[in-house]
Length: 514
Image (cartoon, helix red, strand yellow):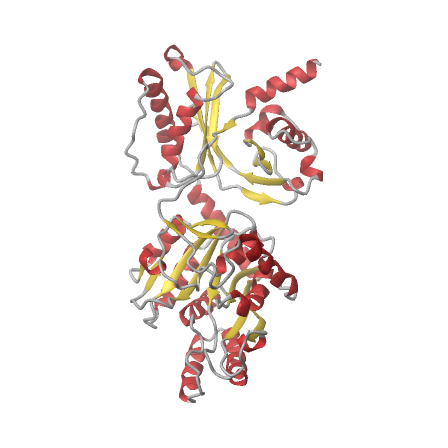
């Protein structure tokens, strides 16, 4: 009995509370679905079932390395869905951070490229956020790349139709970066390839959206398109450009376009050369004449391809990841500023109920990240509340708001009083974006914070809980399941509906940086 009481006491001291959000997240700039009911089913269950059927029928193709990009068609799902599924099947189960989706605009003509600045896109399967950090970096790279959200507010389905496939195969909370070429047919594709080479992370992927021959007879499309795929595989952009001119010169009856997403295709060929990707595979080809509702007299071609990075690129990826972690890490000056914000916020709120505003110019502190604020008094926990998943708040705003919550909303304690302020010590944990993990034994105690989730039940431990309690990994996970989520202690081992996510934290207090 004493052991049980001691255990509960330890949990009380070490466990922080996750800030509860009573309202569903809203988006001020949400792009609704324009293609549902036209290019794919508007019914959620019907859409998901249709995509899963296509995936089940698609051949399982092995690749030697990691898929970095795919080429997929974008016609109505009943026409091109089976070909698209050949590419998307390779992504099943992958953890993708951001999918960069690229095509030539089918509705507008403008110089250079347009990048969407919406908050998120909606389909019948849910809402997917736009990666604001990545799109800003892409736009900043070159003056020919501009934000222009109006370009994306129309019936052009070419990017939207890719999102439901991603929602089915990935399952995790991925983001998107939608990009349109304006059909100026210049060397803008080189600029985009360079921007992607510089800014893509190891868990990002590129989706090149394009159909192939438009409207020739069935046999003509087969002949033209299969050679087009082989040239794309070669990686020679000049050869592709010359071949398109050659096809146009032949005046094939009703042949209007060889690749309607030509600039996206040239982008991925250029990027594959820049990154030394040395495996490109043709996965499937068909055209609209191959489906029951198709007409062989006038068809549209559909090709699926994948671009794969091998061990050489894995080494490069590791180097880039190390560089990214260096950029992510807060320096002492940034830590001091966040601690100052937390302390001044608590003192102002406790004394007069006023929520302070701060002018924070440091770009790093204006990232959107999750954060916990922990208060101690005389070495004992006095309050701890945070947000795991980044909201629409900037980092310094998250620290300010969690500081208020920690001093006034932690249900385990009375609100902090003004006579306690000079005894309060502050600790801040800045969190990485959580990632799903399929093998609980790969969790590293002291490094990883862990989230357990099953349905509406969830629980979270910060990384430092393991150090403070001295638990083994199995004890750590059992207590997380039982005490924090109200689940069976061994659910992380035996329950297939349980999802584990891990994240890292930069944890610092006033004593660390004096």
